[in-house]
Length: 137
View 1 (cartoon, rainbow, N blue to C red):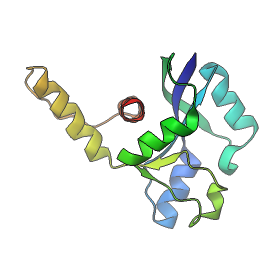
View 2 (tube, rainbow, N blue to C red; view 1 turned 90 degrees about the vertical axis):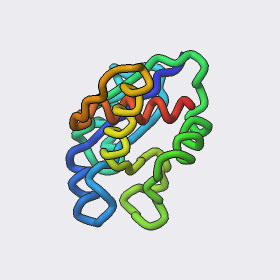
View 3 (cartoon, rainbow, N blue to C red; view 1 turned 60 degrees about the vertical axis):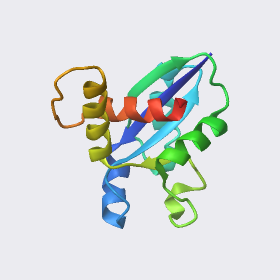
């Protein structure tokens, strides 16, 4: 059984804002144990950062192939291209998104559920859940 997770690094987001990508960049992946994943990301300094936090995770029994899941997510959300940014070191699991897309998605879901839509600012967990939903579609 796999666990899909979304992680963020404040230092990586600051770097993204400095180089002009966006400050809204997140790492998505599949693992067997999400509780240990943040520790593993920090110990191995993935992408040169040691301040990773898991913002969302979901147990998904049918997902075991990370490449397939990242390809599906890449069709919906922009991937930070590692050929343009050497800091990315060949990884294709970092995604850039606009928080307004998440907010409009939340309003759409409320409307489709028959509720009165309430516009609110997207929290990190909302962003993480949005990325996971899109990765699983």
